[in-house]
Image (cartoon, rainbow over all chains, first blue to last red; front, side):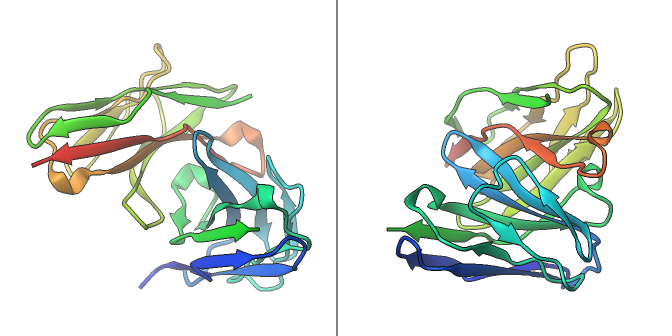
Amino acid sequence: EAQVTQNPRYLITVTGKKLTVTCSQNMNHEYMSWYRQDPGLGLRQIYYSMNVEVTDKGDVPEGYKVSRKEKRNFPLILESPSPNQTSLYFCASSWQGGNYGYTFGSGTRLTVV
Amino acid sequence: GNSVTQMEGPVTLSEEAFLTINCTYTATGYPSLFWYVQYPGEGLQLLLKATKADDKGSNKGFEATYRKETTSFHLEKGSVQVSDSAVYFCALSDLKSGANSKLTFGKGITLSVRP
């Protein structure tokens, strides 16, 4: 089944403790992206990747890092999480970028206390 | 920059009622337009899309027409079901944004359908 898999689904952590949210797709998509969803703000792009070793900032990249060492994986790294990063995070992938529609993962609900 | 404006919610309807969810956009280029749906506890799913003016996207009884003259992409369904209860997002992607053809989302609207 074609899908984007995120882990974990739920995570509660403390301020400053480094964490990684994994994302993997099995569709051989070149384009991957991370979004965060906040009430009243919709979804905002954090980072994106056009291909292996090619990443760039989205609209809200502060406090996040990403890497793309393999085509299928695109982890999101929070080096020192803060409470304002409490949010619902989605990974998405696409064959040729947003114009063709993205496939989204099921989401990771992160709480930073 | 690009932006998407959706009507305020939430929306509550009775089963078999007619649904319209308004969406207007601002874009500098020639965007593709999308409706995504998010069922409770799940990720976003592409519901329908249109890639040029006057195109009509349709899926699962939902329809939306790309209206360039009014910069709108309103979502309609003739007879909603309880299973249509979800959050609906209008979005655009603009080729002119270059390599990052990211999705710009509206704020989403929650639809609840009563039996």
